[in-house]
Length: 274
Image 1 (cartoon, one colour):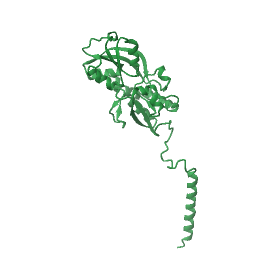
Image 2 (image 1 turned 30 degrees about the vertical axis):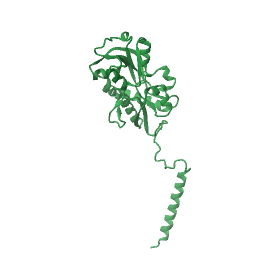
Image 3 (image 1 turned 90 degrees about the vertical axis):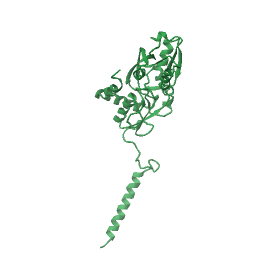
Image 4 (image 1 turned 135 degrees about the vertical axis):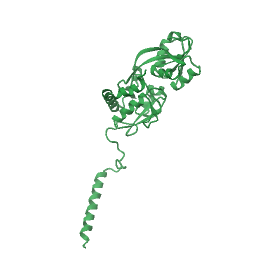
């Protein structure tokens, strides 16, 4: 068999492959990995491509606490809602546990640690100076939790009492304004407040109603004696002026979840019995 035509054909094919490869490669400094890791669709300026990374102060049940099966190690209303949102955006979900005060002040988000904050954070004008917020996703009250045998029946009975509040929260602000005779003990999170009242270090906890309801349900030795309608709504927080595309996508997905009824299903998992 004459092999020369075959060899010539192979040489021409090889040259064509090299030519095409050279054209596709372009600037070798841009995309030396061949583009295999490039995300599909909008990247939203994410901290990690393909992943929605959220920062939250944990535990703060029922909004965020350890557990669940979504792969993050955490669950709760905020986490489950964002898990559903991330699926709509075709993103994975990751959660980082951070301090609330730095989160609500905007420091954590400005540092680029995560894409958004989800930590039962009330939308306030003061916080809007340093943060952008999503559309509201939850309306909340404040409440006063005390031992069942306490003589505290209302906020008017807090003079001289030690009242635990979470630092940097609207609960702290409400107690400061409406219980001037109380001694406020600011603690980093509910993870410190709940053990403090159990140990008798504080006489009461003034904080978000759903969180105190969880304590009341868990231990009959404690009860909510008063609730305060402060007109609060929670929102997901973003670094100021830096995540407009992501914020818009989150709002769109949230609206779709409300329209489809999936939001109600997630809500009822945590609040229907309340």
